[in-house]
Every structure is written in structure tokens, then in C-alpha cells.
Image (cartoon, rainbow, N blue to C red; front, side):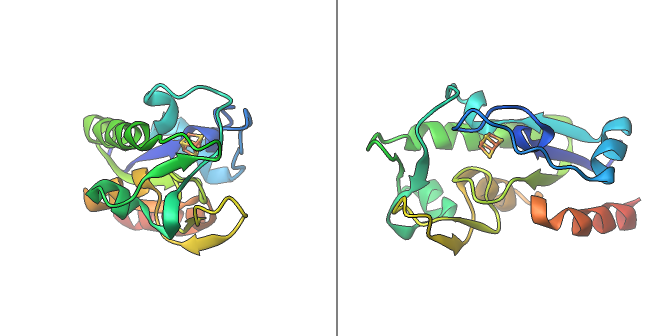
Length: 164
Ligand code: SF4
């Protein structure tokens, strides 16, 4: 199977988010891709040993996933804990799985400091968003994997159809 897709576990209905919830994405392509064996599901944060529920975390100082990868920014919990190491491990785990399973694409939920690829929160825990990548999305993109947010699923549908 070519065109495998790494997908955020919370989008697939797994209750793995920091608040103990899922955020299932309902779309006919999800069912089709599942039947075709294209989907490789991971929660990067849980793969790095984070528990559910866990304190919300954001990339501090208005920085982005790329800055965390380069060591110039940290991921901080609302309670003040530094979880940068775990977020880096989460990203490495996602990339390793994508490589092992031959994923050329990723479909990741937006807004997360790991999985966000369209927007993330700005580190102030005030609900302010800005355009950019979380840590996992940044690492996958750097490795040449095409990353699509949940809002872009129709673009991914067309991309995969063109690839077949
Ligand atoms: S790390 Fe990604 S898959 Fe896991 S809960 Fe956060 S957004 Fe969902």
C-alpha cells in the first residue's frame, strides 16, 4: 500500500487529549482509508509516556515547533512544568513510526503543541492562536512528510487520488 497516512489518535476517536477527550473527525474518506489499510494511528504525546488527563501545555514565548526542535524554545505546562523533553520524544516517536510504516502523509489535528500544523496557541494560555507548527508537525515536515490538518482533509483526499 502506497500513500499511508499517519493520523492523530484523537481524530480517530481515541480519548487521549490532555482533557481526557477525543475529537473524532467524521468524514467518508476516513472510513474508506481505514478499509484500505492506509491509516497508521498514533498519539505522539502518549507514545512518549504522557498520561490522560494531563495539564495543558503550550510552546512558550510565541515560538513554534521548529524553535523547540532547534533548542531555542520550550514547551511549558499551564502549571509551569517544563515538558520539552517529552514533546521532543513524542515527535521522534511519530517520525519513527511514519518511517517504519511508510507514511508519506500525515493528518494531524490542528491547534495542538504537538500535532498543530495550521495554528498553535501562543504560549500565554489566553486562547490566542498564531499560524505555525507544533513540534511533531514540524519534525514530520522537516523529514519530507506531507502534513495536513483536520481542516485540510479534502485537500489530502485530492492529493492521494492524484498519487494513485
Ligand atoms: S498529541 Fe496529537 S494525537 Fe495526541 S492528543 Fe495531542 S493532538 Fe491528539
